[in-house]
Length: 486
Image 1: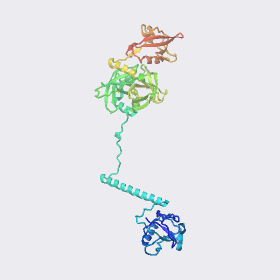
Image 2: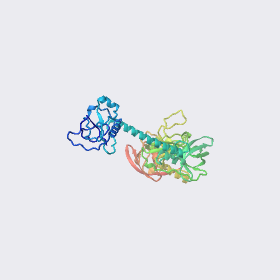
Image 3: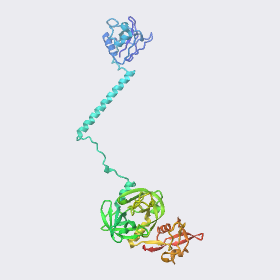
Image 4: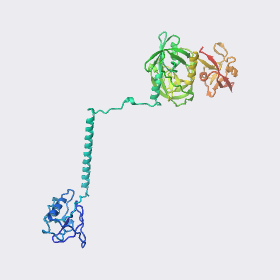
């Protein structure tokens, strides 16, 4: 390692400890301190060393009077002291001019230490070097990757997208439920003998090819006409009526030459449905087959009386109310819960009244026959071809302003309003009594009472609450039965 000394001629100087060469910051040794022995070197070696050190670009100009006076070595083997001055950098002339100090330094017999950078210029240089190194590495990697791609590719740079067919929807989503249910839903076309008819919906009830739908969907073609059922895959089959229940608005069809592998829709439990449950309706509104809409159960046990528009007898139901969009053509289609199980048969909608259109559309009030009731009716129709209705054996008024279901003064055709030896007569009910409750359900009209009765089976025991002359009484009634619609 070399040292740097600065002083006047003829003055003996102490050896200076080693310091970094750029920039030099020598410390003057205190006077009287013993000097460390240094190995003498030739003036040419000293001059070369000094020149090399002061060519470092990071050093700043120094003035001659900034350092202690240079001291010559105690002994110099050969040659006069001081040696010829080294080449002075340009910045040194500004500090000392022609009368500047004389330079010289004895060298250590060891490898010079790499200079340490202290100033901001060194930091900038280091950052620049690092950036160059990083750039070189990045360029090399990029070249390697490009070369690798070029050697392994067929010349195309297009990135392959994921296959859309790989997208799978969870079974519990609306899309998943609809995908599973649609193959079991059919669009029914009913043509009467005179060529008139309409479109409705149905669904596969069992593997034998029975289709469950509304009575008013098939009524026009029930006696003479043509019925077809078209599946979501476009395959069409002729069908025939197995049985109809006009009062329940339920009908069962049978596919002619039914295909194998039919998948009946699972039936839920409509008694366990709660207001707010999600609903999915599938049908052919205005003839648009395979339409799926969603909503919720907005009410339960809603009394609904509806007709088929032909002037026939009305049907009565204690319906599930939903805000899923239901329109003409949805009739007979399934109302599903979030699992995909059938909880009702879409049957009627509430309209805003008179309309310039021939058919009213959805206003968010749709009604479905509870599937528990529809299932019982379907089993009766498949077994016997005719419906069986539970009855109390009394005729009630259809007037909705009586504050309940008022037993009429007489029945149809002048018959007694309370059938002799019927369930109501046995329970002590008389004409003029107003029934206000059926079990725990409030009764506000005759249609409401009929709808509640038809949710039960013949032989069920029920409790009726009624008013007579302002007095409230209860009676236990065992429901009777009536077969057929006549």
